[in-house]
Every structure is written in structure tokens, then in C-alpha cells.
Image (cartoon, rainbow, N blue to C red; front, top):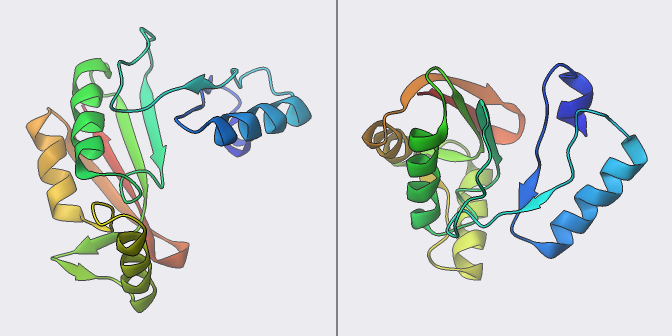
Length: 155
């Protein structure tokens, strides 16, 4: 809803793997009623993707709350499906040079790994390497509130 409101010239197709999250998206969409906000699709990054076209992919708080293979598959799909100059936008906490950028991120990483040992705050450099293996180039990294980063790749 936030993006559909702020960027009304773009069509937004929300997705999620969680039935609960999809229901929440439906409720927000009904309340907001933006013509550029599509009904959500169920999508688990590791399952077959629907045959839809898009110019950009936005993944918020995904790669740290999932196994590394989700990051690999996201990069693979972005590299295959984005058009030339298409954008992959990632948002979330990252390590830089193998180090946490803030004590809060380190504590969050410990909490994530206690929930599932294959989750965790990812090394930005490893994410960039995975993107590059799939034909994506780092465009920019923007520091955000709460010790998060916006990481933008282009195909």
C-alpha cells in the first residue's frame, strides 16, 4: 500500500509464501483501494514462479529470514526474468566485511539463528557475489534507519 501510494505510476504485484501475510495484504488492499495494487499472489521463491513479466523485483526482509538457497534462487530468477536495466531491490540488515554494522543487528542475528540455524544476517559481499554470478550488477547501497540497507542491483 505504501509503495502503491507513493509510486502511483507503477503497477505493484505483492507476493508472499505465508497464507497469513497474503490475508493481511488482501485486507490492506481492500482498505486502501489503489488501482495500481494487484491482488497478491502466493509465491515461495523456491517453488516454480508464475509466468508473469515485471520490470523490477522488491524483496524486503527476505534473505535473512530464509535459508541461503532462497537468496541464490532469487538471484537466479532475477537474472533470468528481469529485462535489461531491470532492478532488484533488497532491504534488510547486512554484515559488511563479515562484521555486524550495529550491536542490534548482531543481537537480531543471534535471535534469527536460535529460531532456525540456517537463517541469519547475510554478508553483503556474499550477496553481491551471488548477484554477479547471475548477471546482476550492484548499482548502489543506501544506509537506512534501524541499521538496515537498501541494496539495488541492475541486470
